[in-house]
Length: 111
Length: 114
Image (cartoon, rainbow over all chains, first blue to last red):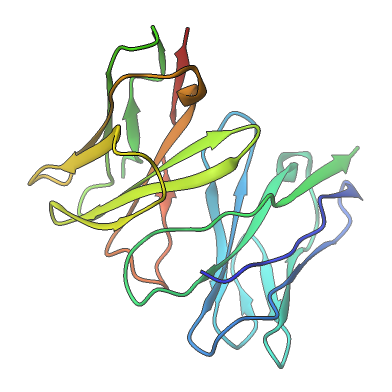
């Protein structure tokens, strides 16, 4: 799987939007962009994924750059429960679940 | 529906012993993968099983092994435990493990080797 680059940490105020960036300059045309988050003392949790178009679900939105070399996870209104480590992952293999996790971004949400 | 269940949640073993961890995937899921999480190395992929066959393998020594049963439940085994094997072991299941499919993680088994 290709490498992704994320900021080590970010901070947000509660009820404000949060934009978590991810750079993936070596992405190939068939790579899916996945986001997972890990809350304290829990396993990672799926957030969202996409290929080329922007995606929305009940948890977040994923904005993918036109050249696909970067993407942004958007939490529309951060809550204290959103404090977690967020991982941006590229899924390259044609089959098989073998995520390559980077260090991720630790998001702190201030009340 | 029930989530991914890992047992036991906590385990303490002595160096040199072996250990077996269990993972029950979500009903209907055929892909189960295992990860090791440590403060120093983060989350690292161990291996993936699909329909009782190992489909992918990470860069871990042969002391780490696994298997999957016909009901998709999976076990991983670590033999000759070392202090450095102390970690949170996570398993994840997905319907088919394809690159556009989401994975569901269990809460993990915290292994401490003393």
